[in-house]
Image 1 (cartoon, helix red, strand yellow):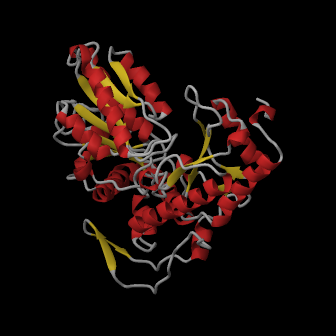
Image 2 (cartoon, rainbow, N blue to C red):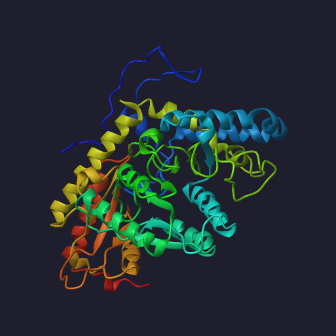
Image 3 (cartoon, rainbow, N blue to C red):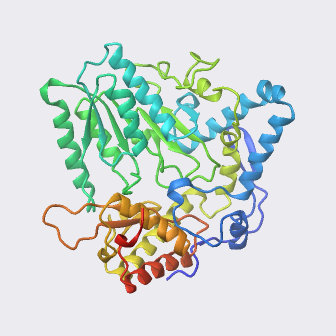
Length: 453
């Protein structure tokens, strides 16, 4: 068992520099465990925070950088707007372009979050239906485990415009990528029945609840072979959590939050738009849903100014890059250690409870689904939410709970799974605290039936 999950080494200060498109950022020494604790000293120490996946985290040094931007704006707003904002946003976009291996900075727009990015793409799809470019009944495909807000956007944009939404049912627990590929192929065939075209496929890179790493490259290749017009990857969790390479993945649109796993403050995400994606040419037909003075100047420019607001979260990407480079191996090292640690902790928990993981380790990133004892009596989504609240209020453990309905004929199966995360601030004791809380509930004969609404 690893005694500490920080897994950080400290090295002397180096005089070398790293380069980001001509800018020189002096390297700082690697962070020690004590320095990491200090960076996250604003976290509530009474809570085992094993839910980084929901809201992410932001270290003190990046919060300080954000505050400097805020004060710079407040000191002289006109100067900031006319002289500083555009160049600072461009620097962030350029760094993101390099991080995700996009061809050109024009392919990268900065938006508030992945939900905003989904609205941009689905709004574009809805216009194609309304303007007659797509036929009524043509299909938009999405995974059954798509994020709830994206499903609402489907309803608000695509369904209202006359599109037919087809869901891909996915098994859970899941044992292999082949199971996902098989269901995806079958859903594509359903979508293409009756002569309909599949105009857009919306594919998660890492699903939220339950969390599973989806084989996006394979699914996108299938879409190309089957004549799907466009592919949008909703990868809210991906950057800083799993491998993100625009050239390898090959999507037309791709979005990810930087405030979940890349240490930025809320909220910032990028939307990648492939320059030669079918039908629009370098994103000229995509528009931010909040229309302001920059409308018509391209999505990246539109998104960089949607009215007076606090843009500071979008300007600290250089500080975030500097922060991750203070860890051994940079962001790649962080991802590797987070994955190894969360799998180790997940296996420790299922061994303690006699349950199972929701997917094999190669289908996990920095989060894993952990089966809870069946005797807890999780029988609905409401039970799952109430149990989550009980863990928070009674035991000081923050962890989301997923209800997996039993299939017909199943008896005594695991119906509740906890989604545990691991980030650099976590320690083994966080997971022991959760283990002991569940063990106490089991020993006391607890069931969700005793929890009030």
